[in-house]
Length: 466
Ligand SMILES: Cc1cc2nc3c(=O)[nH]c(=O)nc-3n(C[C@H](O)[C@H](O)[C@H](O)COP(=O)(O)OP(=O)(O)OC[C@H]3O[C@@H](n4cnc5c(N)ncnc54)[C@H](O)[C@@H]3O)c2cc1C
Image (tube, rainbow, N blue to C red; front, side, top):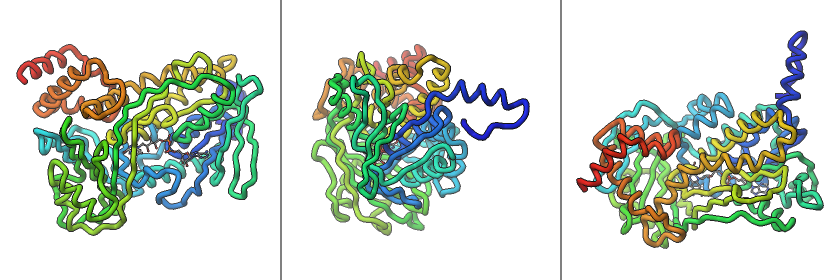
């Protein structure tokens, strides 16, 4: 980090540290969502200045803002993401607790309802995470970013274009419009596209005549509706949150209700392919009643509603294969949703964004002493991020259990689904297997952990019984 040099003997060591870790003068990050904020945290040790440009006005309170419409819906933060955020911004977990985030004991505090298990056995798996609103998570991270003197956060600045050298080999900066309508050009050694949709990256590739990444899509046409309630005095005491799954292939309706800071519940319900809730209070309750179990309906029907009903349509999970491109301009890196957007039902996006930022930080540290680290950064990142994306994307693939899902069905889908069912039965009986499955869901362990030969034997035995 480029803080003031210490005096005396340590000065020389400081100089060595700065010259070996700094790789550029300025990095620009587009977007102050979870991808942009975490990337800025990763970059700060390696650039003299990091500038984050955000089109929205950034609220000083943990409240909703227009640029992230998804923030009105339940945002589960996986333990992997929570830990990654704490690694990037020490003090994050403490700040969550201070902000009133609700601790949840894994395996115990969220009632999981799935066909055949209403509920799935509740047991304390030995660790906790927090439930809290997306605006609160983002506000905490933003404050931790603001606390760093080397990151400058500029709100109401809409990036219009990523700029490149005439031959398109190198990205040289961005052009953006500020709140007064003034257009600025900001030169930079590295541009991170954390704008969510990645449209700026695709536009610059088009403008320089470079190939676009291939895309794998999983079409789910998910419709979400969310409302917030005051937790009533007579709320159930045997759970703090509920997750109700439908039953593939016939019933795609499901719901997730989690506690929020301020003694509130946020309930998100929804389904696929047109099977979606309406946007009014009565329709919301009627849909909650239509879920496979009445747990969420019973909890909220007499609870005080604190908000209207917010809706969101999510057509498809999208994975852009930047790793397959032979050429990519130096000085540009798309990150987070700009690379891969996951079905939000599985609560993975923020955590993957934070894990990608940890990878970025690791790569910058490792490559800082190389001759041209910025030229090598994007291809290396795209390659190494695949390991990180593998497990969450394999979860998104389970959407093919619903027959209307669009896209390339995995050849081994039937076996995967049967294996998953048998694994669920085993997890219900055996706390160690239960713990393993939750660790994989929380992206603490890769899905390949299910390939352990002893476990496979036990799962195959269950499959044979079925
Ligand atoms: C309905 C829904 C529910 C979800 N639930 C969960 C969940 O439970 N758990 C979870 O982990 N994830 C969840 N996600 C995913 C999560 O929101 C994202 O994966 C995560 O926020 C990372 O996104 P990002 O930073 O790439 O983009 P975003 O968070 O969308 O941020 C992009 C930012 O870029 C800004 N921006 C865009 N264009 C420009 C521009 N041209 N100039 C300047 N600024 C710009 C936007 O204003 C915004 O602030 C959910 C998503 C949806 C849609």
